[in-house]
Length: 235
Image (cartoon, rainbow, N blue to C red; front, side, top):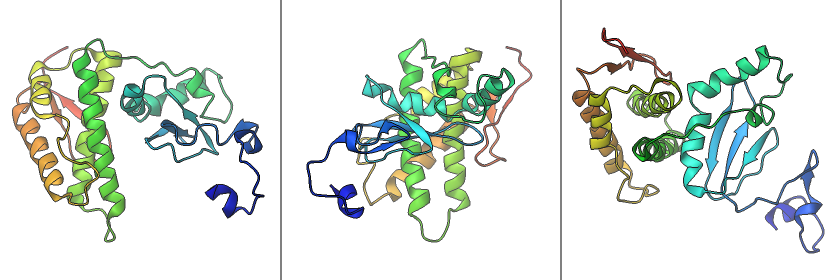
C-alpha cells in the first residue's frame, strides 16, 4: 500500500500481478526472506531477512529451508563467487549479465559436517551486525572497525574455501574457531552495541592467539581482502 500511495495508484485491491519489472512479479515475495543477488564485476549478495526489498538489476533467491540463508549468502560473497563469473565468461556461458544467468550454474556445496556450517552461520551474524555499525556511523568507518569486519570476512571465506576445495583446515585453527565462535546470547539489534563490539574484538584476539602456531596465519594487512598465509608445512 505504501508503494501504491507513493506512486499515486488507484485505491483498488492490490495484486502482485499488477506490478512487474521485465515481466517478473515484483510484489510476489514481499515480506518473504530472500537473498538479493546483484550484478557487477562479480556476484554480490545481501540477506533480506524481513523481505522488504525488491530487485531491479539482479534477482532474488528464496530458499525452502530458512536455516540455509546465512550459508548461501556467505558462499555468494566468497572468493569463489568473485571468480565464477570470469569462468563462465571464458566458457562463453553468458554475455554481459552476471545475475541471474550465472546463478543458474553456480554450484552450492554444503559442508560434510554441521560444525563448519554453524561456524559460517554465526560468523555471518557477526558480519551483519558489524556492517550495520559501519553504515550507522556519521563520522566514517574507523580502522578498528574495518579491521574487525575484514577479520570475520576472512574467517567466513576460509571456511567456505575449505568446504569447496581444501578440506584440510589446520586442527589448531578449527579448534580455536569452535572454542570461540558462538551465537551471541543478547540482542544483535540492540542500540547498545559497545559490549558486543568489545566481545567480537575479544573473540578475534583469542582466535589469533590460539592459532598463531598453526598452518594458517591471518594477514590483516589488506583490509577487506581475503588473504591468509600458509606455513612451510605441506597439505
